[in-house]
Image (cartoon, rainbow, N blue to C red; front, side):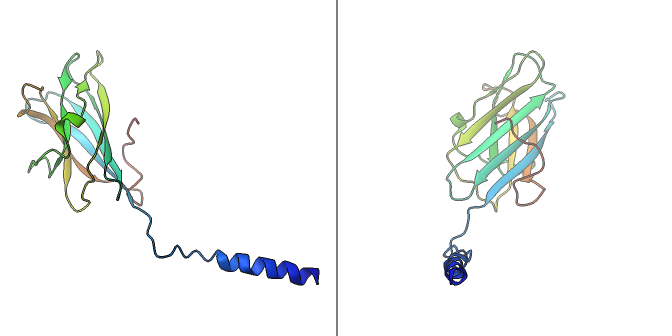
Length: 161
């Protein structure tokens, strides 16, 4: 009799754990990575960047790290729609991106959280400008592409945040 009662308790518990989530879908987390390369006038700047977001959160975080730059400079940077070849508008507010402060070793890194949700069907790129006074001069650029490694959330450069 005790075994029968134990079975009756276990069976409803198993039925209740059927895994049906009521038809809701989990948000998709996405990571896009870029290799930053110098353009004409950019010297030997190199680096990496990424953009991470979860669908339906209304924001993304981006990180950038550069090296081989001139110590003491301040370099504006932004995520843009389009590719390095096509260009495109800044994603979010220009003021949301703190400039890169190049240290004595020629390196810099920073992050930005932007209150815009990217469109996964569009192309994006990261560019580095000569200075705030010379924003028209893009000196380094990298096309953002979905990270490899499964699910868009692994592989590639991992941001310093």
